[in-house]
Image (cartoon, rainbow, N blue to C red; front, side, top):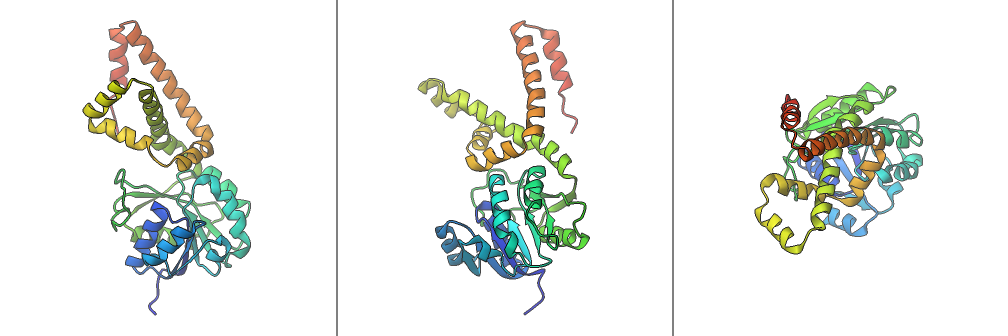
Length: 284
């Protein structure tokens, strides 16, 4: 048996991200064995039938035994419970990583339970291919960022192995602090989703004929907003609640900017509207 990056990998949560990871590990021969851990027996059965996993368990404790790497690909709100469940069953010197878009709250929850002889390497893969509906594309992570937010005591070797895994998937690696990560993604991802939900909720209250015309004449940008609003409810509920402080801070600033625009429009204040517009010219 040829040497692989890992001997045995457990992926907890076989949703879009988890199954995509499994598919890539198989395709690129990065592990000798892949274990699926999911509380849904139908998903476990599907993982076996599609040959994405060598074994599958609804018993999450059993799914992590003797694994060199455990990948938690589950909603942020479930992380604490799963970490407590798997903690006594983790292999010495194993590595745990995750795929959550929130880092500070996740680190706090996991650190309570992970043994001192296990390394936790928090990670956040970002999919640039917006609104993918299929994970059969082996290029799902190509040229996209994977943000890694290691803890102070995390062994360098563990960070390097997780980084190499994502590099093999085609991702670009960036290291940053958990605090900086949560601030950046509150602005670039979490707030836009909140705005999308608010817009769609507003439209839902309009008359049927108006909604029909909105659907008929909507441009691509608007269609993307509605697609964002249709994203997984549980996942985004947990993201909002687990990055609450950063999100509320940027939401307050956004609300103030929106109020300024509202006032300028109401007062037909041409100078103010031009001033606001000039101040928002993108400099990225």
